[in-house]
Length: 117
Image 1: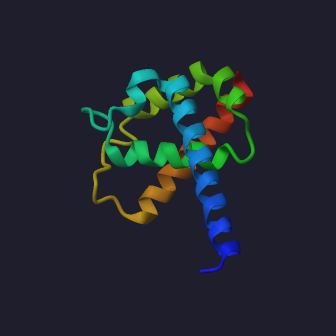
Image 2 (image 1 turned 90 degrees about the vertical axis):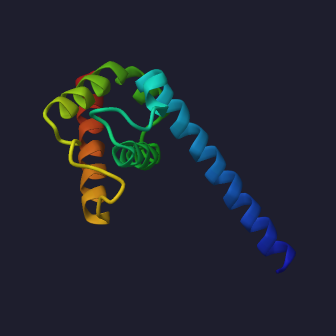
């Protein structure tokens, strides 16, 4: 590989690292210690993965401070979704289509929370 390609790859890796850190910060701000508990009676690993992907995609348009301001509304909407059983059918074998549907649902939920806060 050329020096230019190596430099580009390093820059891409640094960008991914920065994005990942932002997602982790937002998840911690909104959900506290619960954000990194991958399994509970009501919440599957797949659902958390969909949430992290939703946050990552929304961070393209919104800022971390938007999540911080709306964290109580986001957490309430999220908990309401869990209580209604929206995520109860997820498991590690969840299809890609179902995963994408969950992620889009979560993105819409968060956007609505931004409007309500």
